[in-house]
Image 1 (tube, rainbow, N blue to C red):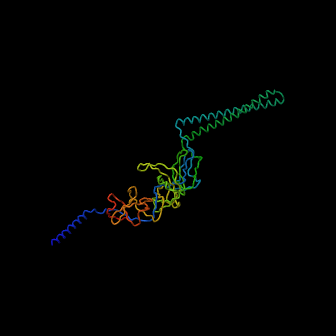
Image 2: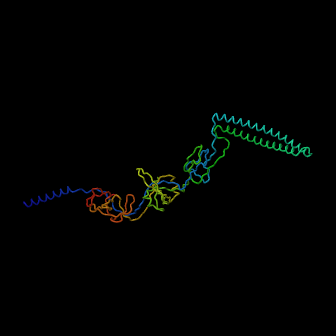
Image 3: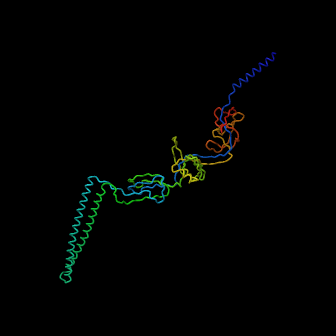
Length: 400
């Protein structure tokens, strides 16, 4: 009887010790986990870009003048050689009261000089007529040898001088007439208004067929030589410029496939890299960090479809396909951590976390290629924290 009691009390003590040990045992660590998969893997580089035209033309005023109203608007089609705007000479500035009175006086003085020149012309013509008569009379006398040869030469000289004076007076009348017209022109345009009569027009034509992209000037007014008026371009030359970080640009090659998204439509547009420019530039990021960027030019595969939906200066997101493969073992990048200088993961087996060294390959966004160390179907911890160690019991919550 005493032996039975001892055995019974021994069993109770063992049960109490087991219960105490179970109570004091650490609870499994709750972790998020995912299954290792083998599938299609695409390594990409993503960056924001802008559409642009390979060739665009800024139509500027070739000379300074007065621009007539530009009727073309952005989006209007133009053909090669179409007149896009017209120019005319500057209107004369208006005269102030003092200058206006001075101009009137100058006109009166010019008219007086014209009358004086005309009077001088009449006098010279009369003198020339008399000299012609004298010369004719002396010629007849010379034929009868009633006057000397020297006298005859003197009369001829007088006649020739009078003829020259008549021509000079005629030119003086012309000059005086021009002065009157010049003085009258100053008064006629002194109001500063553009004259109603026809003006000589300069027609500026389009250097290319396409669309009006931008209208810098619409209303009439004075323009300076070289001032831009319109931008013209053809959407058949539409392309994308993406400024990649230099460390990403060195991995991009002409001919690589590009996926164009984020432009506003549901469709993913296709493109190819045409050129990686040889010179980079420095740009300050939103965080104030200097970034070295390299322009990369992308051509649309279906340009007609892209031109129907996009214009110049539209924002897009370009995804450069650097490498792609099938049946590639991959895990979330967050599952990897460094241990003794090597990449490792925690594999969930028999309810415990087992640390395992792996060899990684390419990385694309949130996913990394595994070259060795894991097999499809195994479960790994996606976000191992400080509580997860080799051999620790875990309670995994599988996520896709």
